Image 1 (cartoon, rainbow, N blue to C red):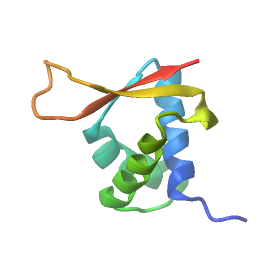
Image 2: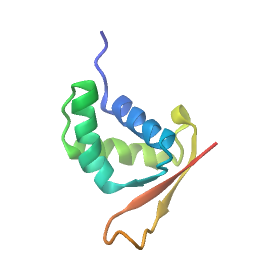
Image 3: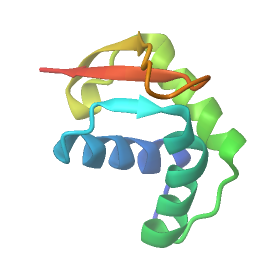
Length: 91
């Protein structure tokens, strides 16, 4: 069996967020919820920094074709202070 990569877990997590209608991704989702998701659903433990690095690499491209995200744009949410967020624009 192939080892499940951090990128694969992140893509699955983001795709699930999109399916649930949650197209705004906050930094706490990457740093906390994704860590728990990877452990609970995939049995893989990565620290928040590892997931954050993988997320930064995905964002650099500006799109995520594997999950039909055509654009990733920074989002300022006035209800959440001092937290970075991004909108995932899908096809």
